[in-house]
Length: 188
Image 1: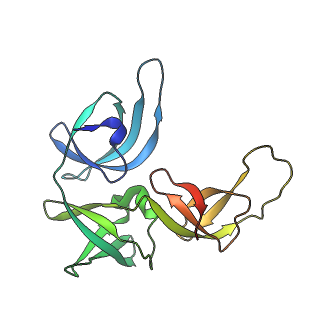
Image 2 (image 1 turned 135 degrees about the horizontal axis):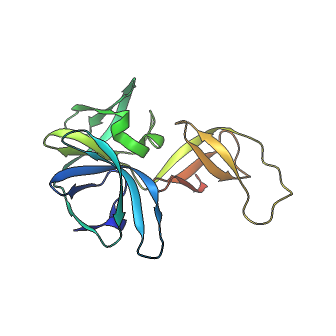
């Protein structure tokens, strides 16, 4: 059984009788009651997407999925084509089906991803927790009027914009946490 707090991008679960996959985390909200986790989920069978909120006390059954290790082979428009490392089979996944993971995957990546299959069809991707990306654009950092942790916006090689410390410049390789899309450190 999965708790609502364990639902992350790429995780599949049963919501009633429907198999669902988490595409995007929209945030969480705590109030007088318990914590509510908001996310965009997609029905694997029908392809319908919807925004849902789940109470932290809710439990879900896991969906049995086949998992294959693969690397990104090429990008064809909005389709990302992955190649299985063992069988060399190629599988297409639409950009929308990748959800937030599209921000962390680019051509030429050295890391492998886990393709998840439901009834023989690829439905999602799980990326490593830490990935290395390169900064392609950011404003120069200005020291001075700061008290505490100062950050600036930086555009990465995938087009994703993330907050980084002032010492990061264009061409700097950084480590990102794929669970929440935050800067963790400079890559070595």
